[in-house]
Length: 305
Image (cartoon, rainbow, N blue to C red; front, top):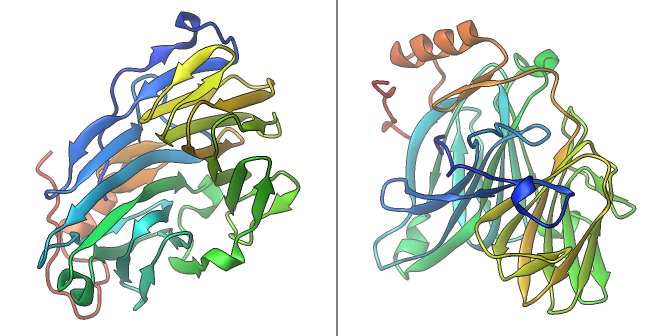
């Protein structure tokens, strides 16, 4: 998927809860007829931990014969993290990987020095109609790993730790939380999790990481008297323990980590600590020097600006 920006954030001093640094209202956009809500990058907040890009995909319903068609496109300097609540996407990449992802699974594609991939709805799902609902995030690689070899890892839902009880269900996608550690390896201290809450459930979020945020996928929550609905990314100040009260059935994504080792430049699908590296990636894609996805001839051309 490709990057743009979210709506201007609401500063924390406009709220009663001092632990909230800002509230980012995800901007609704369109990628080839498919609706997304983009929360990162945003004005005044380019990343949270290593997360530099955060898109909610759907919920959308495809009619007979229709589906997602994100043609082959390149990445450098990041890992894409794809996680679904509903539906299915078939991932293909220039490493030769073909992998369907289903709800609760995680696909982690590390671009490193360069990878190309496509994301599509499989033919059998097009013949019956299908739905799609999920999150795609990008995690910037530390400078020491930006030029690493590209790689792809898939973990099925039953491989990820689950924490349940007291009206809450948490699936840990990356990092360590609530005494559990995910098998999904990433070369920077970071966490990422899905939390599903029943009305009245309370979810704590400790200050184990310097940078933390919660994205409200659905439902309504309360934090210290402030109420938030779907499409809000709440960014917290360091050092405060957070308690989230579910006012309805709610689904949240928890994300963050340690502050990155310097700012990141983002242009289209390229992320790097160096502007000249992004310029090189632009030239390489325009000249056809990236590897191709086996069996695919389509591609997304380099944007004009």
